[in-house]
Image (cartoon, rainbow, N blue to C red; front, side, top):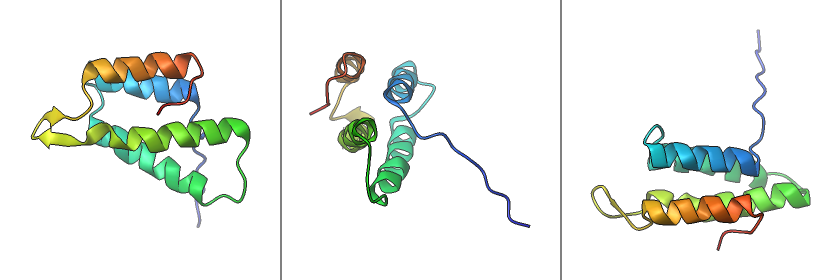
Length: 96
């Protein structure tokens, strides 16, 4: 028997929520990056994206770098920068 499951595609609100979880420590940067990568792959495999999907896709691509380390446990993008990203996404601005 084949069981199909449905997973709701992420929105900008989902991105904000997950980034907040990273800041609180309830989600690791690596877990966020894996989640984002799966959705980037999903969007990449589609023939066409809506404008909203394209914005989410672009932000997820940018956020794949969230787990880049300079040295163990020292990240290239600090918590302050993640907080800024949350603000930008809330304003509807693309991350760059």
